[in-house]
Structure formats: C-alpha cells, structure tokens
Length: 160
Image 1 (cartoon, one colour):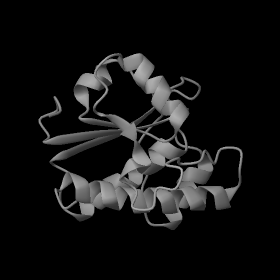
Image 2: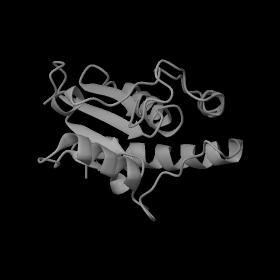
Image 3: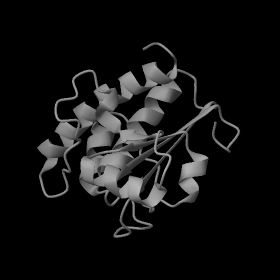
Image 4: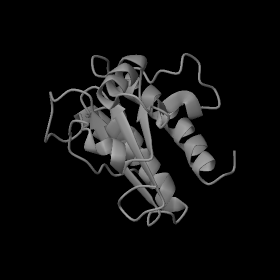
C-alpha cells in the first residue's frame, strides 16, 4: 500500500517524462475518475533521465490528449529512490526504462513491470517513443495506452 493514504498507487515511467508516461498518467487518471476511484488510486509519472525536469508534456502529447477529451496533469520529473516506497506498482514504457528502474531500485523488484504486461494484445510489450515522430505516432501511442490502461484498471479492481 502506498504511503499517501490511498489504497493503491501507480507510477508510469518513460525516458524524459514528456511523451509516453504523462500520456499514460493522464489517460489512466481519466479512466480512474470515470469509475469514481480517484480517492483510492494515486497516479503519477516520471522519467529515468532528467532532460526535461519541470517541463509540461510535449505539445503533441497535449494535442493528442486534448483531441480525445483528456486533460494533462503533470510536469516532468525524474524517478527517485523514494518512489519505490511510495508506489505499489512502477510501470516502464520500454525495456530500457525497465532496466534503468531496476538498476536504481536494487534487489526486490516485484513491483516493477512493463506497462504493456497488462495489455491484452501486448505484442513486443513496448510503448514506442513517439518523440522523433509526428502526430500519427502520438495517436498510435494513445491507442496502446488507452487499451492497456483499461486492462490495468480492471486488474487493480480485481476483475482480471
């Protein structure tokens, strides 16, 4: 259980915390709110690198979220050791992020997973980084994030 007083807590992590993880945070937060569970699930995002600390998400991420009726919530921050005590589940967007998180965490890594481990159609289990792409790449990431977030919420609610 998280230290925030909420019954569950999830941290989404990508490289810079301006594309994939803030999109996952925003989409998941919206699904949680739609279920009336915002008081019981803490949700944040972070990056494994400090390139964009304090910045809002990439404008294409914001544009993709807004056209799908979803607000964005965060400014970029870097994952810290404190996050391992604070979050029940830490979800990496790709294998490189997963390795970076695990190297920071150390021994007990049972709560660190790939985000798409929860995807009903996981493919290669990676959320591709859309940063060097165009808006269609952000749209693709949105579809992956939406599908996986729905499955993750079902899992947290004990439905899977």
